[in-house]
Image (cartoon, rainbow, N blue to C red; front, side, top):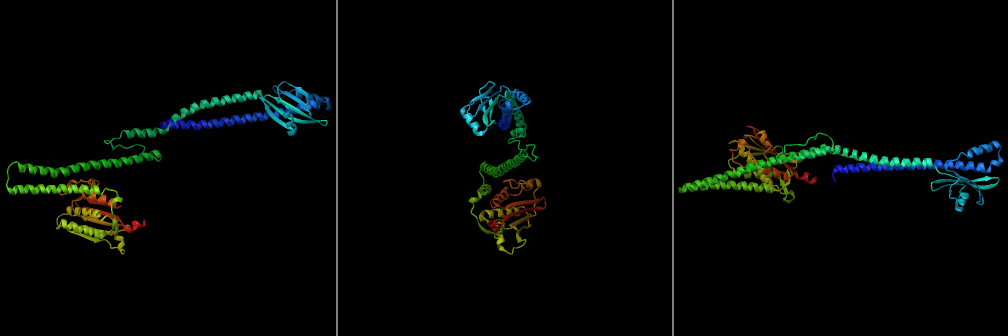
Length: 461
């Protein structure tokens, strides 16, 4: 069942239940009031009958005349009966069955006043004493006029209920349509969004209600999806380029070498060139494997307690082994009084790769003869490594892509590299609940900041 139909049904059911309860209450209280009021009128008739039948002989002619006038002001279809103490009828007026039985007479003797219904006829009985003798006086009538009004009220309530129910259903249908219009609009807008239209966004996301919050959440999700698609597209494009270049070079070199017989030295040169390109492909493959390993679940990584400064020095030594001519300076912004604040919890091999990649990037993009500088800083809950170079820098529009695998800025494409180092470092640091930030200016250099939580703060938290 659609939400609109469900809302209409629920709305109509609630209103119908309220109307039924209201109608029953009105009808019941009207019926009770009518019955109680008519019983009082019949009781008055019973008293008048007792005076007319039992007291007329003991009063003046004027009082007798008043008793007679009161007595003959009858109620509709009135019937009265008077019995003596033994239950013998001594007076009867009007036609109709009052339902008087010996049990009714006994009950009246006990209660002195009795009210009961005999079909549609209402009956009132009273005990009356005259000249030391007890009499049982019954008066009854049918409230035809009020019963007709009560019947008319029932018809009015039923017809009003049915008519109102129709109006309620129509109003509920229109109300649900109006209430669901924002959702219908959202659905229509979402249906227009495809993989090729991720730039589209939902409207009405600026309000304060729940639907606006839903639209905002969906738009945020589209932002993330668009960014992911863009990163994936960039990754595929750059990865294809990086993989295609060495393969094309290898194929070209080999084809040229096989075109005709050549000297031994020429074959050696071709083999060395092919070997270099093969090593380049191996580095690319290893980089992809390391990115995949750095994306695994954190729970599957073996962690241990490490000193952050020792980790940085280990990475520096490895970087210098790979590039002996490079210059890297590492110092402390401020050495902590408590050396425990230098401790981090992580996987040594992975963190070493992350720091090494950052240091090698700084070496690679520093001009010849320039020093890549690293600074260790201990903050309140984190340890930080800042690595600076004085290279070409990164343009502002390229900074948002630096963590996309295989992405390389246009101004550094002539420098050997694959665009794997920073994306790999970012994934490793995320696994360790750390972070990495890159700040750069064209022709002024780049600063990369690595942050990791201090181990003892992490444990105590």
